[in-house]
Image 1 (cartoon, helix red, strand yellow):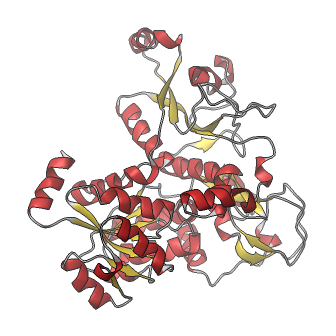
Image 2: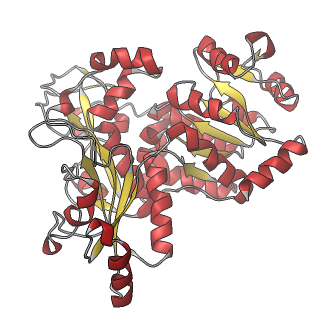
Image 3: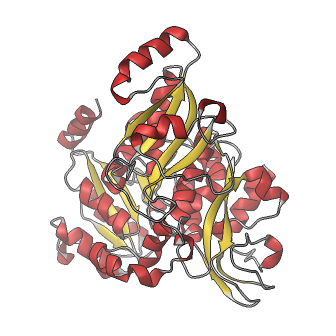
Length: 441
């Protein structure tokens, strides 16, 4: 068992040493959880706001006078080996520290995520990607590089894609066919036009950034997370942006089924969202998926169908489809489990396939004029929408990951997917170069 192995490493004075990139809600939360674990420790926090990183260590028993602040890899190496926490402004420094076993990328910034993940993999570190914004653009090439380097590249346990992948692995290992894989969401009518100022109070309460919280509520984050899920599991959206109907848990198996089975789908093997909001704008929390994840599965075996009907009789599921529901995902609380899987077993929570199955494209929140600067997911200009990768290529649509700090070269109306020809892409960026390499492979 993992716990036994961690206890042994604790006793031997050889903990799994981890570098966390970003000290926001997710990165900081991962450090907090590791502080209560045996056999694993957050050795390095990389964060431009040094005081923010120091505060994370301080709340876990390491005041600033017991933490080394440095951008020097030799000094950092020495401190890590002595069990002294390190704070650095250099996100790529951990890749140079031989004592570090794994890196958790938690910045949420595509360009930074690309640089950090690449450096970590090339430095021989297992890499856990909380940065789904980068993974959804260049996950396949990072996974290929990691495989070639003999290290694990993984999405994170606790994030909804990770939780879905764990449930999916259980189901397909047992021989079930997956009709739908999904998560809960809370997208009220008009949510796609939300902007960061609506989330300033949440930023003050929870840490993190208002822009990141906006990305959850304007639909961007749910679309990214389901695209990440699809790229690991080989699933697709049934339609652009998914159907995202209002659904109670007890209705999942009927709503997210084929049309001939009384559902809304035109194909099996899709990703979806179950909304808390009705079309009229009423939010209903009790009985809906909420923060949970789900699968709708089926089997063509008559005895398995009989067994499932018997076992699901309390929810009036009469087949041919059945919903498997996990009512929670614990984000950064569970992230250390991906590190443990990688370091102890050489396994991932989920790894993207060789080619992108889906893309998240940038769609305008308002009428935009030539010369305006796009500000990425959760900002004022665009939100992200899932689309099949082949369709995105055919229509030359701009991946959301490139819609950061670049200008429009022509006017684009509200609610319009942005094409490559509408913008001046920064071709000097590392994210872009990795994407070019991925597309060519």
